[in-house]
Amino acid sequence: MGFNTSRRSFLAKLGIGVGSIGAVAVACGKSGDSYNDRAADYQKFKDERAAAVSANGSAGTGSSGGHGTAPVVQAQGHLDWREMDRMHKKGVEDFVANASKPSGKYGGQPLDFKMEGDVKVFNLNAVATKWEVRPGETKDVFAYNGVLPGPEIRVTEGEKVRIVFKNELPESTAIHWHGQKVPNNQDGVPFVTQPVIEPGATYTYEFVANPSGSHMYHSHHNAMEQVGKGLLGAFIVDPKDKSKHPKYDKEYTMVLNDTLLGFTLNGKSFPATLPLTAKLGEKVLVRYMNEGLMNHPMHLHGMPFQVVAKDGWLLPQPYMADTLDVAPGDRFDVIIDCDAPGLWAFHCHTLSHAESPQGMFGLVTVLIVEDPNKA
Ligand SMILES: [Cu+2]
Image 1: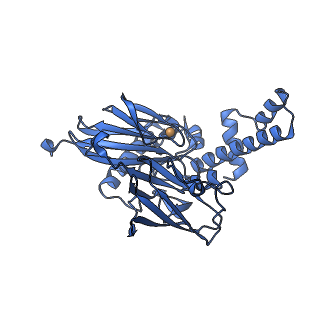
Image 2 (image 1 turned 60 degrees about the vertical axis):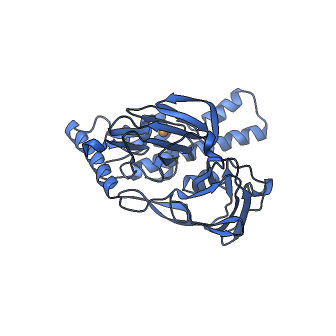
Image 3 (image 1 turned 180 degrees about the vertical axis):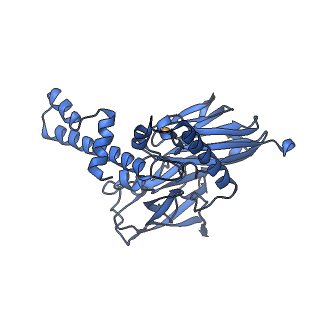
């Protein structure tokens, strides 16, 4: 499906006419060039985003069916219920099979470092490559060290950090350390705090890790496209003094994204997403990170979770929830007290990000709580 056809059909389905933003601008009597330019830019951005989502949704013909907005709408009313059930079942079976023996590449693994004096040194690059979002669906992506999400960079609060970055992309870029209190010239915003890092160039970032908590790193240049295509990762700063922090037995990071690669959880779309696993009675920390353009109300079945931190900062009063809206740029730390054995669905509750007539897709995984007494 071509770019324009795709965009028009997507907008038509939503009942949105092209140029509606421009009409609003005129109706409001704001006719200054800069306002109209901005309105036009905004419309262009919205069109491109809609086209990206639509194009992604219509591209997949995997075994579990389409998984974006367009095919969902087209398919409704055309599937025999038995066929629908078969596809839903197959998606879950594929997920379970993959969970026990994951196939393909997964990102987000801790990045190796070396110490130079008292500085923790990491090497990172950015490359254009291919990435399998789910079986049968491979995308052209930009990736840090070739994986999505990029490798996890993990340091301790107060540690000196150096990241030697090589740009192997066909375009310029720069890295922003989202949530970190860095010196102004290390903030990674081209033409605001630093020159762009051109193709082939190397740039070294250096700062002291602080504050602690769940943070992110991502491109801050042509970011709608570069982050949308995969230039994102977790930057986790362990607290120097853990005594004030809640205790947990294991942890998972969920990096959410929603544009050029479709709805992805740690770079994968269900059924290629991996489950979270815990033993009965364990406490699991989940770090939600939204690198996308949309809010994602993340919902766990069977157990609530305790929200303990926002953007790395411990909350003065943690609270219980089972659905937590994670907006673009947000990080939340939640702790699940795994007191209910079984397989529990764990998904974004914007249902168009999670389920179609052909089965679940996108921002869906499962929390498996094992009861050791029933092995
Ligand atoms: Cu969502």
